Amino acid sequence: MPADRVLARTNAAGETPRYRHDVMGRVVERTAPTGEATSFTYDWAGRLA
Image (cartoon, rainbow, N blue to C red; front, side, top):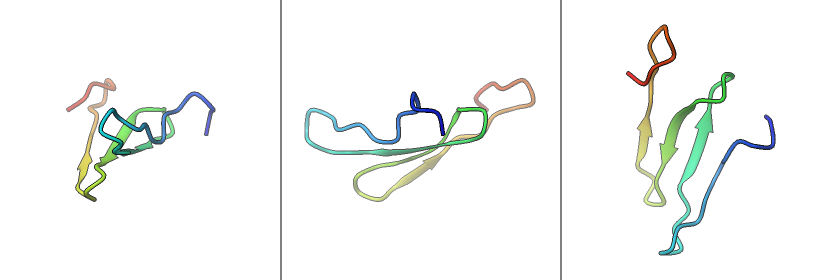
């Protein structure tokens, strides 16, 4: 994975959500500090669907 991909970022409240990327570098999942995961999908043109 290229070094410029954000895997986790601690916010002002001290929480650290995690991010997962696809081979194109797009975020496909964000996991909140509570464990709740949000998935992202993209259409054929690469637009967030």
